Image (cartoon, rainbow, N blue to C red; front, side, top):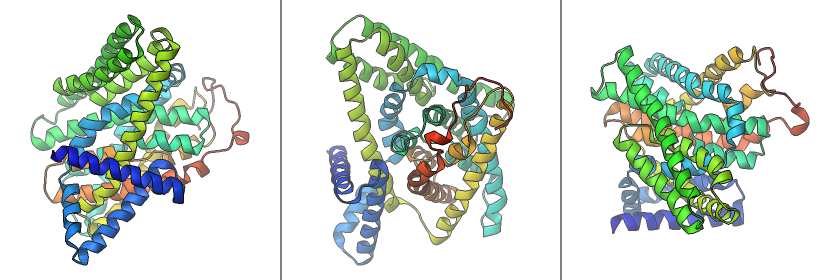
Length: 423
């Protein structure tokens, strides 16, 4: 009953805030929900200071929601599958080296840079943190969030050459970032030995294992979809693929996010073309678009309400503000390396580094990973800093991303595989 009441509160608030935004404010959907949720949370905090008893009950409801469990286990699989379902695999494969390098080299380099600079800068503000926790903060803040990116890119009107890179990178670097976080957490909890071979084995098992699992799930789903022509059963098969496949990936300690992205790409491309009738495609698209919209609305409301449970202090907010330019600079540097190297034989659209850097939005996944840390001083500080970066990322970067993207008249038609100098 408690679970049902929590769901009822979140869905009701999402519907109410979405209506207010659509009727009176007019911000892009997810950003509007986050802004209204934040304002509502701040009002609740002020009313709580005034001594209203009902406020305490609302705060307790939010504090009892396990954000990490709700997102990473309850919602993430659906959101990633729905996001990958409409990505053109052929266009993704044309840019596989660029997207692959951004999602691997970029994430790992950014993790190291953010972690090292955080470890260096914190003592200047009177704080000290073990280097491994600084690296964990880097792993939390380095990957972009596909859930935040996909929704805001639609509103920004990005040209195709930019959209496919940002979308593809965010879908895969999310999975890579979670794997890096899991590897580092193993050292913190004592579950793994911090040796090069141990890191390589664990990373290969999580990432490569998740990729193979996604291929198996996608192929199995394709076979089942091709064998029948009943849209209701076929929609149910995709739902089972996501829930059962994600649960199996977690059970086998494989990367569930990577598995869902790969499975979604297979069903959305090969499955859509060769295993579905036009009627099934229409119903499948409608189902997953609606589910994606509802879960996104609930997630962004939850991010806004989560401020009620955050250990925010004046100092932690200040450190979070410090982390904003740090994260942006490290992302720019980490993307510059693959862009410069690949730029010797592949072309990039103009201003790609600027767009990728500013378009690298952080979201609920970063907050969820931070909240999964072991309790202690390091956790409170990392959670607070992460939350400030995420809120800035979604609201400020999300609202201004359209101004960073060159207009169609400014983007020359570039054959992306032609040799070119560094971007």
